[in-house]
Image 1 (cartoon, helix red, strand yellow):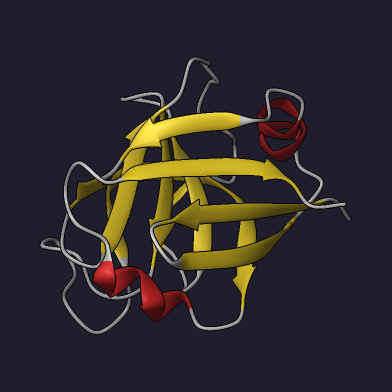
Image 2 (cartoon, rainbow, N blue to C red):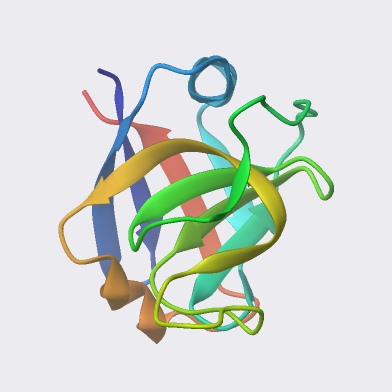
Length: 124
């Protein structure tokens, strides 16, 4: 499986992609840079790609999951509940294509602020 590195400030996390069409499309676009938006315990940023909603797209995801939000062409990283969560389980605003998972402690992303730069690269 392909791996990526997500960096922002002093945070550096590795994620493993799941081999889905969404994962392949995003991996082939790397490196990417974005500006962080914070929504509860989710960081997301727009990327220059449009991918349709996958058949297995879903709202409820796991802590550490990476999702692509087709409505906003956004790369999403979930690390806890969001404003639409009804429990401690992260929940996207609308269905996302889950394409990978953070290896390690995704809650480090609680240190990220709106406007922080995020860089995503291939992990070799």
